Amino acid sequence: MVRENDEQDAIKSIDFAGGLCYSICAVEEPSFEVPKMTKLLQEAFNKASELPETEQDTLAKWLLEELQSEREWDRLFAESPDILERLGDEAIDAHKKGKTRPMDFERL
Image (tube, rainbow, N blue to C red; front, side):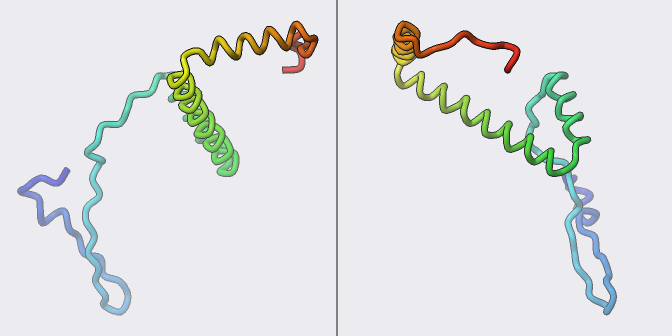
């Protein structure tokens, strides 16, 4: 944050070739509060920051899509509290009709 007494220090001039002069403001830390992360999430992000840029982007895209999907599911269930019961009934019906198969945990 810029202190009142240091207002002149907040603007600095940089001379470029040809005598042109541009003014820039001193960069300050954001004034908003950053949400806290768990240690495990921070560790995951630290490890991810070591990945090549394309892999970081792939991971970020997946995570953002997953978070959006979770929000959408939460919204859908909130709008229709009986939806879980209906989905359960559909799953039981499908199983009774032989449309399901045992979970192969080796293939996950």
